[in-house]
Length: 139
Image (cartoon, rainbow, N blue to C red; front, side, top):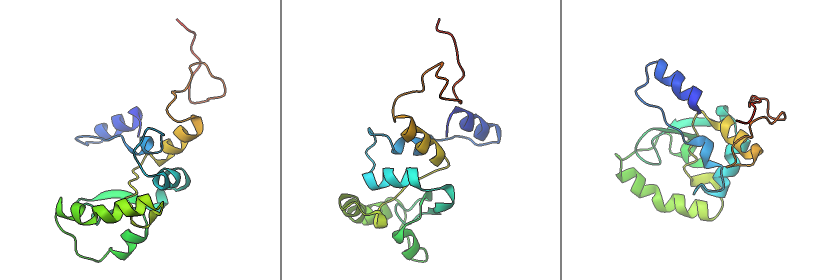
């Protein structure tokens, strides 16, 4: 999600909007490397909503845990989050996506764009190679 996405969400009646997914793939992010890699490889069709990791509904890239726990019992937050914590940590440490909460919202294309652009660097003004950035004269 970017500024235009936030404005659109608010115009459609949302009380709030959240930025997050686009930043998970950046080097500064604390996300597991396997999560970062999947964000730039996956599409919006690869996501689903689950409450199985934390006890609260959230969108993530569908993985083994989401599939196997789909019909399983869920504790209320924060108990579910505590119960799955060590499993998520071990999966991340092992570099396996099977049991990580691979959070991914509607900004997955932004994660790919940020990764292609060189991560944390903003687009240069006047860069003709970047069609989404209009050329502006320096002040």
